[in-house]
Length: 148
Image (tube, rainbow, N blue to C red):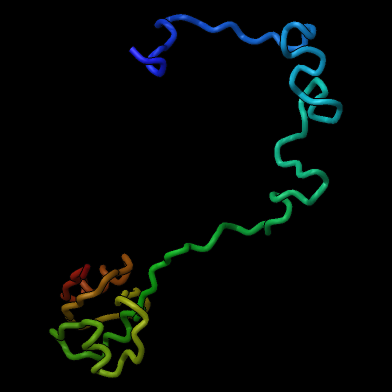
């Protein structure tokens, strides 16, 4: 047995220190709160968020309707109406759209949006589809495949 192994017995309770009960008690007079000042007085100190008169943080920050997403996914978007110019049974991917000249830039994975009409069946492979786009492609007899 060593000194660092010594523990109080299970279930035992230590008496709480009674401060401010005379000099012989060890914490007499000021009760360990120091001499004078706001923190030595009875009652609570300052309210939460108080910064000593400085404009507090919750009043300094702008009151916005939410915060921007830090790692927001950026997609190359295209509407269904742009795909209507392609021939039937074409496999639509980001690279095939760039080769066809429908898309010019690459701002990330392809996402199909549902604006416009589609009358031809296409095999579309994209990272994401809106609900309207998926229904319009499948209603025209095409298929939607989500790429990882």
